[in-house]
Structures are given as C-alpha cells and as structure tokens.
Length: 355
Ligand code: TLP
Image 1 (cartoon, rainbow, N blue to C red):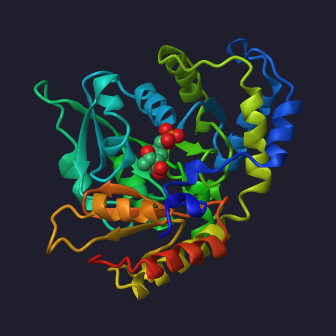
Image 2: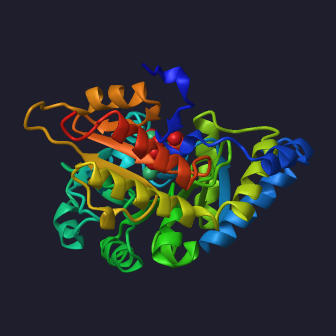
C-alpha cells in the first residue's frame, strides 16, 4: 500500500507554484535598489520601462499581484457608482474577492463568456446604460487573455479588436486582464504588443508561467499610470526596496518567455492522456497551459472534491474551479515526464471519470 509520502507530489494546482530559478535568486541578491515611493529604485524603473515597451504603452507600474493589478487598474479609471462590463467567467468577478465593487463602489455587470473567453460584441450596445439619472454610468469593459476559467483559452487579436472597437465607439475604456498574456502571445503567434494594442490598459503577471516569485505590471498611457500610482498608494501597495523583486521579474522576461510553448505541449499531452482514461476532454481545445475537465455529474452532482482527494492520495495535486470540474496547470517546474508520471499514477490507481 503506497502512501502520499512514497513519491513526490506532482503539483498541477497552478503555474503560481513555481519557485524562482537560480538566475532569479542571483539577480535578486545583486539587485540595485532604492525607495520606490520616492521613485528611486533603478531596478523597478528598468522593469517598468521594459513592460511599457513590451505592451506598446507609454508607461508601466509594478504592483504586488495580479489581483492588485486589476484592482488598481479598475479603480483608476472609474468612480463609485460606475458600471463595469465583464465576462461572467472572468477572474475579476470570480476570484478577486469582489474588490472592484467593495473598494471601488463599481457595479460589475456580466456578459456571457464564449468558449474563447470573449463575448459577443453585439451584446455590448444594449448593455451600455442610457444617460439617465436613475442608472449607473457604464464606463469600462474588461477582457481576459488567456482566459483562466475558459480553460486557458486564447482570445484572438481579431476578437479582441472587435470587442474593444465596439466598446470604444460607445465611449467605454477597455482594460485587459493579461495575467497570462505571454501564454496567449506564444499560442497565437503574435507579439504581446499586438494583443494589447486594442486595450487602453493591461495587467500582466510575472509570477505565473514566467516563474518569478512575486509581481505584476500595469501598463497604459502616462495619465493613467500617474493615477494608478496614486491608487496603488491608496490600497497600501506602495513598495520600498522592491527592486529585489523586480530583478527576478527582469530575468523572467529575459529567460522564461521562450519556454512557454513547452508548458502548452505538456498540457496537450495531459489532456490526451485524460481523454484516454475516459475523461470528457477534447485535447484540441487545450491551447495553452490550463486544462479544465468537466466531470460526469450523472451519479454525483458535485464530484470534484472527491476526485481531488483521490488524486491527492496518489500525489497528483489539482484544483477545483467549481464542484463539477478539476483544473490542471502545467508550468516551468514540471517536465513532460512529470506529466506522463501523473497519468501513469492515475492509470495505476484506476482513477477515471467514474472512480
Ligand atoms: N489566478 C489564480 C487563482 O486565483 C485562480 C490561478 O491559480 O490561476 N487574473 C487571472 C486571469 C488569474 O488567473 C489570476 C490568478 C489573477 C488575475 C490574480 O493574480 P494573483 O494571484 O497574482 O493575485
């Protein structure tokens, strides 16, 4: 009888679990730092300039997390009582503690997400409120690319452009939650700047597929970044000698982008193996590093906690986006062999869709 301690766990819970590489640790050790609230941290300044350049925007701001990046971005271009249009499966509405409403006083109205993480641009005009004192002001629309809860789906440049154009014609600003925009760019064969051009503001993460320990960036025009710096202070996110973190972020941008395609190939391999084990998953639909499996609910309306526990027993760690799905995420600390091993453990333990 094997126990979980007989073999090291294969951690497919998220790409956030990656540990900093030796090059990141060395760069952190050597980082030139200063007090960034006084604008005196040269390493943060370098990272912000690099992020602005990569996204084709005027300027950028370093923040502690993807959640803070979205929050600061949304609060910086709304006032209390405004309305945000956002997909119903967006991370902003599902996994950020309702921050935009609680802290920003902004009403988030959802539009149904399509499988690619976008939504039908034709829905936008009817969703924008008329200029009427009874109604909130619809001022902002948010997109997400890749789309986490749509299984790492890539929103194409064309769809991004169509949705953003429609929003702009109606006077809305457009924010892009690009936590995994480098995955989207790798999968779509576009530059990050191509994918971010249609949006006014973008947030992206260094601490997911790119493997840095901490940190996200917000990018946009100079006026927005000026306001975002103030909002970051408001929510307690002004950091001092955080160049020590930015140093790892610069290594992430230099050394971790080109390997993202490996994570995508590993996710596809995992999906193929899961399909062979009988799970309902089409490997062709896996575009990046996230695999979401919809489980059979005919015998149990909420099967995912049980399956998650069974997988934990064999040292395969996954998350449950809801009670009917499991999620597996590939990343820099997992090889193709690790993914194959996870599948072998499942086969050996006879874990399948109705296990
Ligand atoms: N997502 C996390 C969990 O919160 C689900 C994960 O493990 O995938 N936008 C998107 C699209 C995200 O996926 C995440 C993190 C964030 C924003 C927030 O980033 P952090 O965790 O740095 O606050």
